[in-house]
Image 1 (cartoon, rainbow, N blue to C red):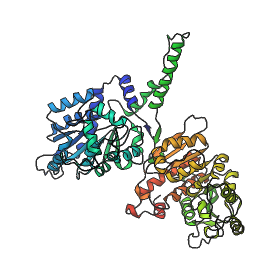
Image 2: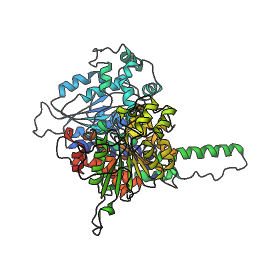
Image 3: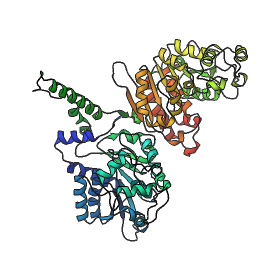
Image 4: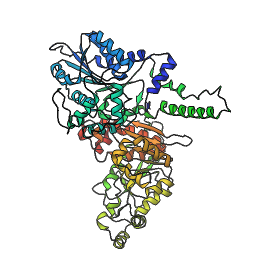
Length: 635
């Protein structure tokens, strides 16, 4: 596992203080790391050029831009044409210094208005593009100038692209998706935000005032070709974020690198040492987290006492910022259910998973096969929506039982279960909830909004939602809750009663779950933007549950007994080939298989998630061709 931090600027300062480093030393190490990542791409394999190899560096006016100028000075010595596009004039002390050094070394400076022309002229020789505009300290949205420059850079073909610290357009402590959405709308909003004003004041700009840029961006979103840059909405949308092949992040991993939106922007992520090892850089925060030395404080002075309290509060805030907020999972973190040490065993040794099968039984079948594939000795399907004919959807590997088998060791509820609407019930209506809890369930086609008729039609069924929710609440067996079950209000009672449970929603299902739990009414976009915060809110309300929130990067959170904060893990191993109906059912079955074999919920969620994502890489076929059963074969 690797540590992930909200923001590493506090670690930068701590490392300088702890190891006697200077900004100059750390910046030189950052530039060296950027140079190493690009060096194998500087020269064309066929050695054919119109002039000679060219490298483009996009530079901001702060210390991220300073890294870019230091990089330019280093690589210009390799008989490479190096051009720095000054997206903003050097503003910070280090940026001014590094820009002066780069100029003296022979680096070419160009302004953003000449960028498209320079790209066209150098396109054949252009080998590498570096993004050094904004680092993790930038929050808010890109202004029109930066958006247009990033859009132009993203259109460059054939050049290897490297981002410094974090791709421009991905916010720092904010989730990248929010920044990207804001950036794409920048032309539609002509009002200056505090973030835009701060960028203009602190970073400066070359050959164009902030007001002019803003006016150009907000003029009916029409193109302006006076300077070779089209200031229009489509350009800003293209510039959601710099799309890097590799991101060289400085010192330690940042949370913003692992938002869903950052998945397509970051490429491969490499951590650069800044003069000390990564472990020393991360551990330097211990000094920040140490209690404040309040010796010499006059205990009788209320003013000093107030100052002391404020100092301690500030110290606590710094400590929280300096500590890791999550752990990045790696393939070696999985604890697979291998059987080498259990030769004297039988099928009952490896657990029995019972899966409730509802209106869409195929989902339960997929989950059942995945549970068998991941080590279960036995799997049973328990019909919920009446007597279901499984002849066409299940083969002889899976058993079918009218009720939960007595020897079952784990439950799965949700895949294909059906939502309230599927049964003619409106999930937010109290009468509907009561009916859903007491009436037996028939198929969706046999229930309508007429409750007496619905009750009569449903009475003939042996299984009901009352049975499902009753089994979940009363049984001591661990359970996996997935998919449709999050749309039922009874989920709140289940979570209040059950401790050993793993929930596996995607963002839309998580929004429905939060609403049913009374934890807030959120859109899907808000869930994606605030997923860590909302996951922690869920863990605080239901500390006995383990949450696995699906997405381009999977988030797993659980509050263990005796710990103040929930443990948070991020799995970034998955690929887009998993974006296929049934992939989530496979994951639910895999988690259940581990629970049935005795794994703890958090351990089961972590291991199954890693194995599930890794299987998407192991699939021997085109990425679009991966099916749930193909995924199982690759496990």
